[in-house]
Image (cartoon, rainbow, N blue to C red; front, top):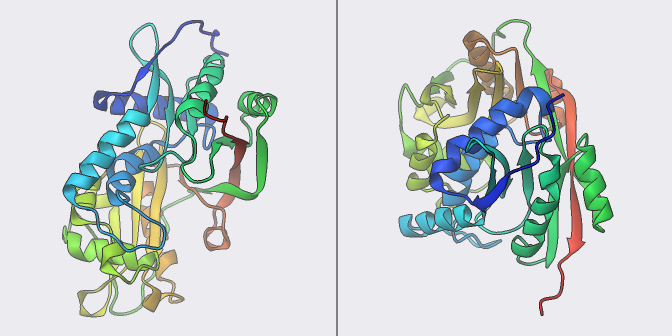
Length: 325
């Protein structure tokens, strides 16, 4: 076990810290796994896609943010992140969020730095109160006993109704996905048509209104993410050049693990095996790169039927926000 550390400096997150947090997540994966810390794909995806995509979001309102609004959302998100720096200038801990507004706090840290958890909770309680619920919400991995104990002592209550499941596919060899006649696998490395790609994403998540699709700027930002690869951004082309299913694979070479984020199928083409096929194609490509397993942030029947096995669960712990003086 690593020797307990005694010093770390809390400071505001800077854009230059992105890779430092990413390295923390990659370094700690063998020790902690997911969801004790985030996977590195979630960190990439949050900053470079979710934040610019959801700028100006209002529930139930179709809205496409401008480039300026997306840039402002990125700056606001960065201002809400906090990092802890070790003696050598490395990032040893971070409090992260997933949306352009406070809603849920996620804690990332290296082994030996559990002593930071108290400061992390303090920061969440002071600065990350849910904007509508007026409560503090912290995601806690099911095996993260130190954090579970702390939030329990602080008066938090576990939400047992909405667990966040995770599952994993152990690779024994590259699968051989099958497609119906007239359908083909392609990647953004083959044809970087952002307009068609953002449409299949929007429709796959049941958004027929183009104002609800990711903007072109948001997709261009995604492609700027340090760990994004066009050759692992997969889609299936159907009749009439229509994109009908999609999947992004993120590959962690050091840990030989792939992550799927996200996966979707156009509603007009469901129940034809296309979602299964694009996932298996993602697994195949990860296997050819050397992956030993592929993870996904879900444990629903769709993935279990493909061969994924449930691994970990995270729960939300909540507490009413303190009254402002």
